[in-house]
Image 1 (cartoon, rainbow, N blue to C red):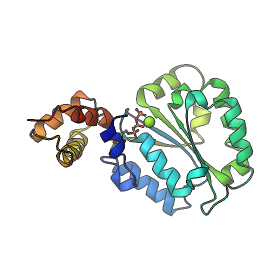
Image 2: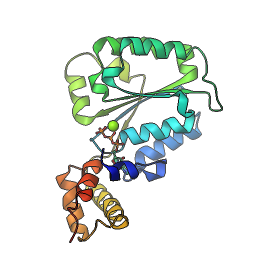
Image 3: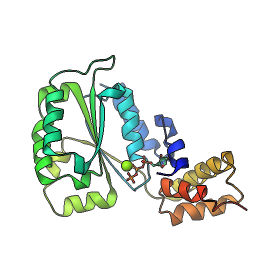
Length: 219
Ligand SMILES: Nc1ncnc2c1ncn2[C@@H]1O[C@H](COP(=O)(O)OP(=O)(O)OP(=O)(O)O)[C@@H](O)[C@H]1O
Ligand SMILES: [Mg+2]
């Protein structure tokens, strides 16, 4: 992860550029019954803000020590068993909720997925935890295409699809990246060049910020 991309990682829902539909849905759920006891399935392009959104949701409902973030390869059967045991009680602390974040979820093994279908139905799990899975659009396609029937798993989840196309999104991203470039002394090009950059990067904001950091927008 480049320095700029990490420095400017969204910290609040309103920091998530171009994703107002998703943000409004999350806020709606938060106001109606809250974000605990839910399973989220976040799907979108690489560098569209899925992991950032997962962390923002997590921080909203859980203390830092009660948040576990793993890649799918680390999300083993043993890990799931351990998480299930942890859910038998609330974590210590004010917020009192466990959050488990799994990145790259299209790489979860079949056995873990079938175990999760049971675990996510457990009353104590539903009472004391929230689970957030992130995956890329490409990954989700292969998840549906082979390996296993993902639908029973997804039927337990709130699926949030990140915006991944459209002229307005390109413009929003371009303005965002230019603002950062200006703040960091990396700017020297008109907005059109940023629009081109966003398109070249296939709307991956991490990649665009890495390019800016390498000086591609200097005059
Ligand atoms: N919607 C967004 N608004 C503002 N910044 C963003 C957004 N999406 C991505 N970024 C920038 O890109 C960086 C990487 O974002 P993040 O890790 O959330 O992407 P991701 O969707 O999880 O990508 P991947 O699929 O590759 O894991 C962030 O730290 C931030 O700088
Ligand atoms: Mg991610």
